[in-house]
View 1: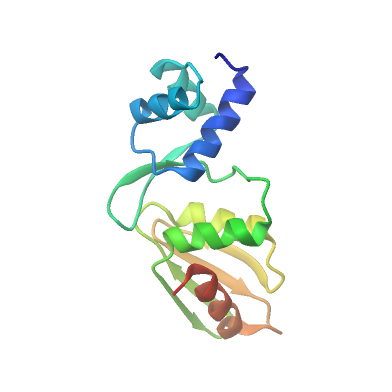
View 2 (view 1 turned 180 degrees about the vertical axis):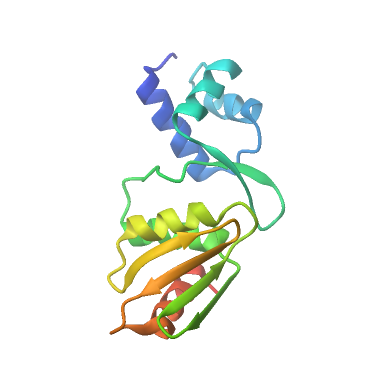
Length: 154
């Protein structure tokens, strides 16, 4: 079946959330498995419009991710999934928390933290493989680090 562009892009974003997609050909095949017909050129344009980026996972594979895509799930569930998949270490000092990720994926995690609206987090700054999380003074970095570590399963 052929879907409208917005429907197809929504399907692509969901597939990227649910599967470690390493190539456009693999994505075309996943779409076909769900009954959606799309060419590699169409998928390429869709990925660009979705602002999908390739990020390196902890296992070493580079996979597509759409940082701004939000599933219709509870923000904490989405955050738990993202942290569990991408975070490799959490440390703190004062009201600052440092979160480490595989190279090239810090922005994915920072976006998920920002979008989750965690009460004790003022904001994040992402580099390549490191995120600086600023905790509210009343909460402190230790409390926020424990929460992020727990959500990440560390």
